Amino acid sequence: MPHRPSTAAEEAPPPAASAAGPRSRRLTIRARLTLTYAGLVTGSGAVLITLVYLYMRRFQVAVPGESAGMDGGEESIYLRVTLMSEFLNRMLAISLGALVLLALLSGAVGWAVAGRMLAPLSTMNEAAKQAASGDLSRRLALEGPRDEIRDLADTYDRMLDSLESSLGTYRRFAANASHELRTPLATAQTMIDVTLADPAASVQQLRSLAQRLRETNRANVETVDALLDLAEAQSGDIYREDVDLGEVVSAVLARLAPEADARGVTPPDPPDVLVVVEGDPVLLRQAVSNLLRNAVRHNVPGGGIELALTRTGGRARLRVSNDGSHVPAERLESLREPFVRGAGRGRTRGAGHGLGLAIVSAVAAAHHGVLELSANPGGGLTAVLDLPVHAGEAER
Image (cartoon, rainbow, N blue to C red; front, top):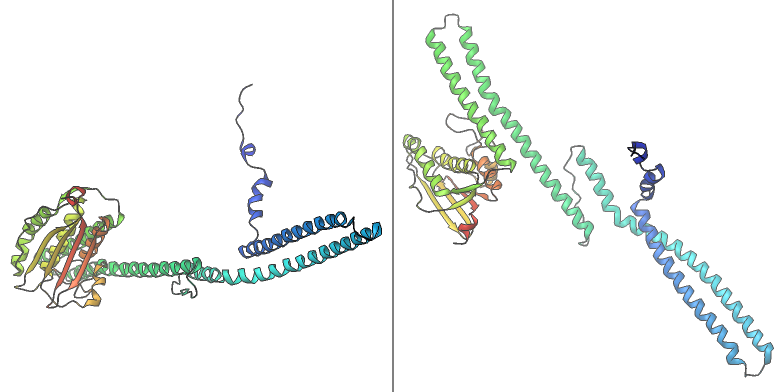
């Protein structure tokens, strides 16, 4: 017989089977815990009553045989058996009544105990609903013994702290990015409006306007490129190959030498050490370039830069320290955020786009490393890029 393809109606489970799952989950956790407590107590009591009753029945059967040789005859034996049967029946009735009362009492106590145990979950549910509406300010701050529910509440509080911090960071990023991109566009619009408002504008004025617009556009392109680098570093999906950090640092120093001379900053000597890490060569070059560029641009005339590249165990550490203005310790963590500068968020020519350390921090995280920042007592900043070295290098 030819095979007939099954239809959707034939493959679908019967309604009764599909409804069995939801029906079995209608009881709340509190009700299920109550039934569990009451069932355990009632079952244990029933087993105890059954054992006692069977033992007494056996004792009842044994008594007539032992009493057969005693005085009293059959009438005495009958009386003993009758009294024992009445005693067993009354004991069984009393025991069953006590078992019913015990089941009801255990159910009531179990309901109260289960409600007390699950109260933090109800509070957590309300806090989760509040967080889903956008308010992340509520914390459980559960007190009491360290148990599974307390651990869950603490984990929930830490999750809300992390979410609130991340949300605040992204909000600041959106505001700062809007400011960074809107300011040059508004400036360009003003320059165009002023020039067009002058009917006698000369060719030289128009050329000057075109040059200023070109500089503004170049700055915007640099900002967008930096944002793309930041997004790539934060994606986590990066290309990996062996990269010699010493060679990267030397190449970046050679490229920054003219800018350092123009600013009167003494550049450091290139490192003479072989440190190989596994990672994305473009992102690592961008991270090193940002560190050294910041050390040059955020320096003082006549200032210097200290540089050290070392390999300790399985870690590679690139330390860059520069002279400069004093950086408050409370501002160090904010320097990792996009569009934040050491001297404030205001943008000045040549101050950069404020994404340098944010990119370095993202690149370090993408390579399972970390960026350490510390303020120098005499002014300036010390940045340490800590990365894991290549597996072969770590064994040396």
